[in-house]
Image (cartoon, rainbow, N blue to C red; front, side, top):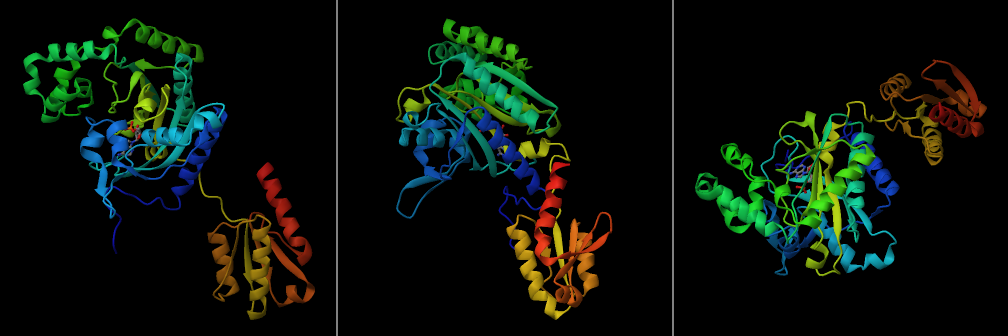
Length: 421
Ligand code: AMP
């Protein structure tokens, strides 16, 4: 056996129903908030993320599956979706094509991280992005939508955390304040943090090294260094969230590990998840669209980790539906008619199983029971001679003979009643 690559995983029947449910809810919530789906390639030019995600981020520094392809071009498996969605928005001038510049994407992302529960090298995200609106009303709407998605999935023990990281106007003063507060203690921090202090001091808040935390906890807060427009924006986002009745906590450490964020940042944490507890995260990224060659448009969005949402969903969130019918063939002459009957039921929308291996009737009945089929349709010499099918309701145990010509309609009606009740 050749096992799957470390940090990747198969989603097998039993679990896949939870994914299908999640994806259905995701599509539905996005539709209701006015988002249109976009599907972008998993492979992109490396420079898209160097420019978009940011040279000083851990993602670009350490985690990209980047390589030179056979044509000599530097490409990478995408580590996140935002730069790809922005690229597609710009490349196809979607602003002109859509009344609302709201896009979402679902698909796999790749990061060379140390795998653990809730953290994989191939993982999946729902990515939600809205362009062209600077008003804090949209920040609040996007955050409320993220909270609604989590609630729709039945995840009860979730916590919303928000912060602001300011803008290019106020960030230099904050970076200076960080370095002043750190002073000589920079030397006590890990190698990554010492590098961050030189390249992008804000990134020090991304550090997960336990030994560094006491120093980082004592550092200044962004909210105390905001310029007046950033300060007003943050206040307006909070007010709008309160009007929505959305509960949240402000965390001064929430700067998010990507360089493009401006002003609002947020995360929703799943309390039951353990160490990798962020269900989703996002923020505003005014400036990114222009940086990636597009018009000067504001942007805001979030990415939700589907593996983590599936883990946090209640155990009974979704189960596989049993088959509607199982066709049992008795004797050689019934085998082909049984296949045709199964085909007719399938064309009528019913999930139908049938035997291929000339098993005994007893063994076929057993398999129908094991599959929890709702109805068993029996075809033998008598049924064939009389133009009938014996229909056995597996719940009541009742059996009756139904004309072959009526059987598809009959089952379809029974299925409809079943869905309605
Ligand atoms: P990020 O793109 O880093 O802001 O992450 C957004 C969300 O994607 C996180 O909140 C997680 O739910 C999920 N995520 C990020 N990295 C991973 C990973 N390596 N494995 C599983 N989920 C991840």
